[in-house]
Image (cartoon, rainbow, N blue to C red; front, top):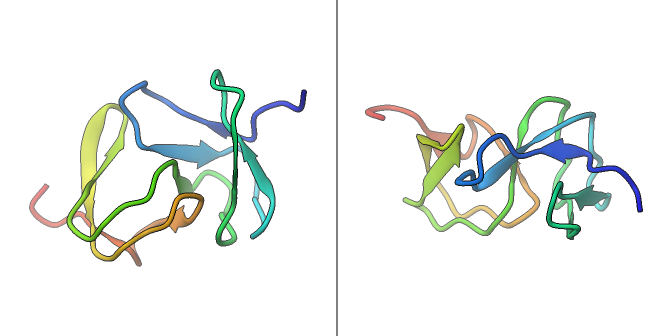
Length: 90
């Protein structure tokens, strides 16, 4: 079994953090769960990746806390950053 290539900081998190650059189409190996998802976009090192599908308005949770709101629909396995989440008013 290959090592995970993301970390999940808190069990409540719905995003993971890339341990290296992940290319679109690459398998994202989740720690502890033994599951894999496919990267839907390129994900830079140390950036967030969606562990589930988000609808516009859904909460993005990292560190067990809400860090933003999805500003558009986001597919599981896609890069999450300032282009698709809103942090104003959090």
